Length: 85
Image 1 (cartoon, one colour):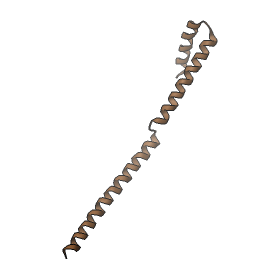
Image 2: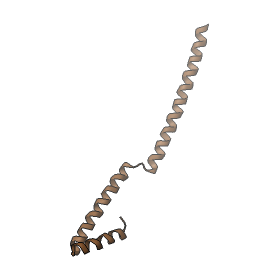
Image 3: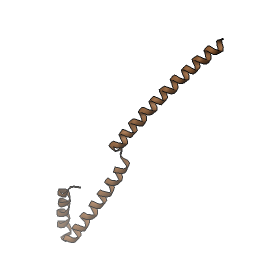
């Protein structure tokens, strides 16, 4: 939450409560709640490093899959050639 938003909320609450301390306390509580939710969401969301790691793992898995397919194909070809003799 930006300082401007906090100040605007404080002004509104100060007019409503007609008490600076209550308004300050409520604004601080709201800021803590917002900060906690942002930190929680930050842990859930995919970061740039996570995305790069995921792309690397996908590329590695694709390469390993291609190697396995080619290897099995070559092995089948060799076995079929040997069994024909």
